[in-house]
Length: 185
Image (cartoon, rainbow, N blue to C red; front, side):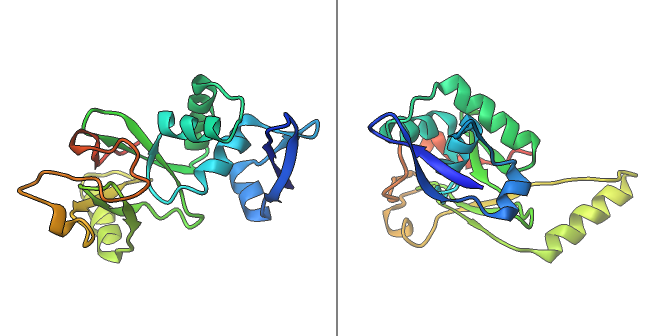
C-alpha cells in the first residue's frame, strides 16, 4: 500500500510505503488514488513521539497544507481508537491526548509533568498486579492503562516547587494546566 501526502499544488504525492503490518493493523487505505482522511491523520500521528491533542494534530496537518477539518480529525482519531491503534490520556482540563499505539499493544508510560514528553516503559510487575486485582474481583478480559508521571532529567533543573516549564521544543501549548494524567479508555 502506498501513503500519499497532499502537496502545495493540490495533488497527492508519494511519501512512503505503508508497511504490511500497519496496513493490517490500521486499515491504511487509498481510495481512487487518494488516501483516506484517516490515513492522512495516521501519517502525521505516526511522526509524533509524544501524546498530542486533536487540535494540535489538526494544526500540524494544516501547516502541511492539507485540507482537513477539525471534525474530520476527531472522527479519524475516534476510528483509530476504536481499532485499538492509539492510546489516549487526558490532561488536567480533560482534553484527550493521542499517541500511536505500538504494535505490541504496550500501554505503560512515564510522562514528564513539565514538558509533556512521554516514554513507554515495560513492567511485568504491573501486568501481574492487574491480572491479580482483576481475578480477585472476578473480572475477566480486563484491559488497563498505566502512566507514571514525574519530572524528566531535562526539566529537573527548571522545575521549581511543582511549577512546570516547557522545555521540550515540540511541546506546543503544554503548560501546567495541560499536563497528561491517567485515563483508561
